[in-house]
Amino acid sequence: MTVSQNKIAIMAAFIALSSALYAIETFIPKPFPFIRVGLANIIVLFVIIQFGFMEGLILGVSKSIIGSIITGSLLSPSFILSISGSFVAVLLMYAIWKTHLFGIIGLSVLGSVSNIITQLLIVSLLFTGIPSAKYLFPLLVIVGTINGIITGFFTFYLLKFYKRRFCVTNED
Image (cartoon, rainbow, N blue to C red; front, side, top):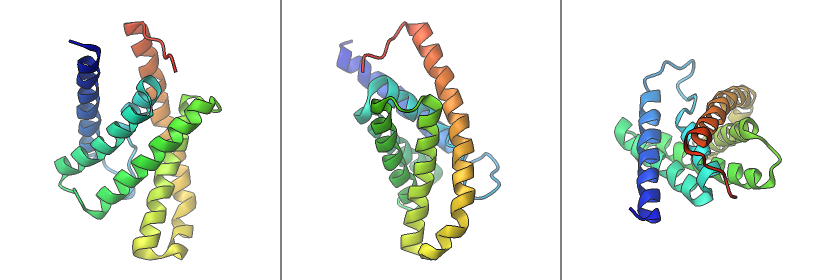
């Protein structure tokens, strides 16, 4: 296998894993129907850090598309929210990762909160109007922070395991 074939195989495995986590998470009971922990984002953040922006973006978009196909929500409002939130979160997490201002957990919180804010803005603009967003904003930022800490914690340990197991260093 050449390096590019190996990278394609690795990315396919990550896309499959993150899509499965996305779909599985729909069966986890939620306190509110629109709140998810974002387990698939563990893999997205891992890929951003380990492989880079384009790979993270491909993964984020792919898990939203495939996860939505699996759950039967492709082209629904939840799909639009998922893909737009993923896009913004990947963009911000990569940009901040390159500045070295935040660690893994901080990046995860940034990604989670930016994902939620993006989705809230889209819902407000397209469906409910801006004034309704002010009521949900504080709750969603708190939930996004908690979810970001959880996914950041798991990403941190996944990176440690990966580097120890495969003796990989990040050259970026």
